[in-house]
Image 1 (cartoon, rainbow, N blue to C red):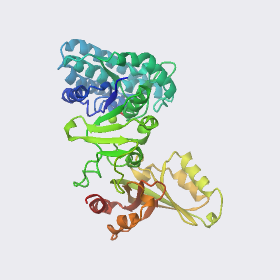
Image 2: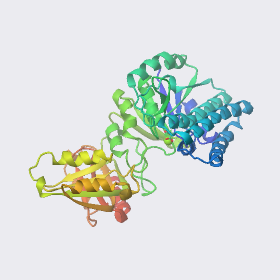
Image 3: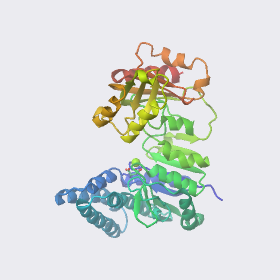
Image 4: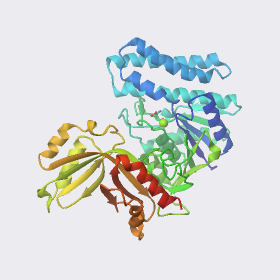
Length: 452
Ligand code: ASP
Ligand code: MG
């Protein structure tokens, strides 16, 4: 079988007509790229989510629908036969309107998913038309024919085996014809009764990886608005350098930081089949990008440094902890009950320090329910600290190489370090510092570990 590359374009990559044309350039430059997965045009999913939240006021609803229309009009008005495309977009928007009214009466996750799926349905339709306008044979494939999920609306679970069977039946034959560029939607799927589902916000990368697995792709390219992964966030440290390749494990350790380029769950299907993933910028493809692979030629001790702000540290202590069994289990079950994702953990004989993953709880403390503290206080002393930032050093073989900790901490020895986590993974050393000193710490670390 011929090599197959799957190209996924995020919302900013398909934001408008010009951006979509850049995607067409990228796709048609690689003869292996035959399957294209797109997100909704930038901003559209957010507008649809707003409609789905049941905006009761019909003026507001119409305003949002006009905004969505304008984004797509700016694309189709550049196409031949624009009245026909306008009719298609209007047809989709009339369903959106009906669903948004329905959402004011009974807001369900099922209605929300049907509604928000229209972002991807419209962007994939329009970019297919641009491929045709540019003289390439292209079809828009409804991914719901193959992307089978369970019925957990809003964050559906992909049914990998079924996806693979359905892909073989419905998608592979079109790809095998060889001369057609197949465009499809990220993010959306369907359950066994044919109801539209979604894989969760930002789910298009995951769609691309799932399709990569089902089609036995040789590569998956994730095209976004940054030219790959950097040694640190260039907005914070201008000396940041692009990384040409890194392993799945290193990428997973980096994923939850700063630029959030690849989410680890996104990579799971690719990792399962060892498919290399490329990350690049569709606006500036010539700038190169990063390959994420099972193994890399070089495995430097230090690959990157990263920062995550807004960390909340919870310190739990109790003399009952000494030699007790089940203490940690009890603590963690309380966090689980409140659906709070625990990030770092460090323990002493009589205390446990825990940080809460700020990714989804960005405003820090305010999102932690008082009832959680109440339950914790029933059996231990609780102290909460905020104003902290998490710094992570990512690399290879860190726990087995001498001098690693000395190298890391000697360059920042004038800053207090609040908590350290080391040894769980040989790819990661991370610690907490004061929020106000975080960028300085990151800059020093980058200079001493990576600019040499
Ligand atoms: N359009 C969806 C979102 O904005 C999915 C994606 O872009 O990956 O969340
Ligand atoms: Mg996106």
